[in-house]
Image (cartoon, rainbow, N blue to C red; front, side):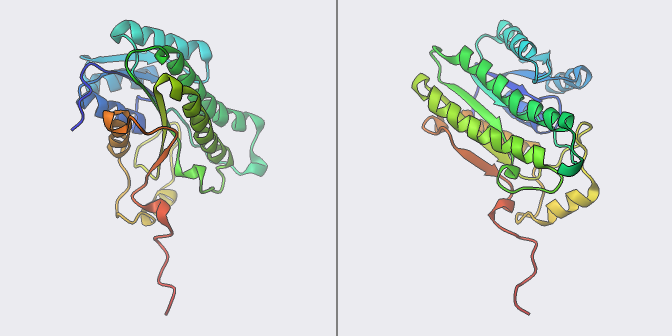
Length: 257
């Protein structure tokens, strides 16, 4: 359905989970894919899973300006200008506000919000003046709209991504660069960086009307659409991919006896 042959797509946080799912969808659609992550071993494994053809892997801490810019330079040396960037890298630790340290707050805000900013700014600088319409996609969360206990820093960072992306969309519209946001619901992945408890996952599963947790390719498919010609007139918008869980409280019993 989607053909990205000849396009260059860069994904941050691409070694595992949602990021890898997005990268795999673009690779399957024919794109040259650049994987960015801070874990070199996981990055090598991800590239091997996709196959070395049409893939580049670059190690970077998305909080570091110099490292983000270096990965973009190296990726463009490999495949030419980046046409699509997906700013996906993020972490989701849990800690109550009254116990939260400044370092814990900063780690989440710097990884999720600053990391998104640096990837998007670097992408925009590269895309301005390009003959091909640029596409920037940021990955927020339904937590941007629905707060969670013990996740104030995470929720704040994901809300920040939404407003940042909307502002960026306004600024870049004159350059024919679109910026859109994906807000995943619960996506079933294994994470060493941000593991989730079984109790937490079971409660989330029970709230999904479509009856199954999301998979990384569900987010990847939305990214394909937003990067495709079908979305050329869409910018500054948020798209929830949650199996219906953001529509309401699906796990409540009937109100009447």
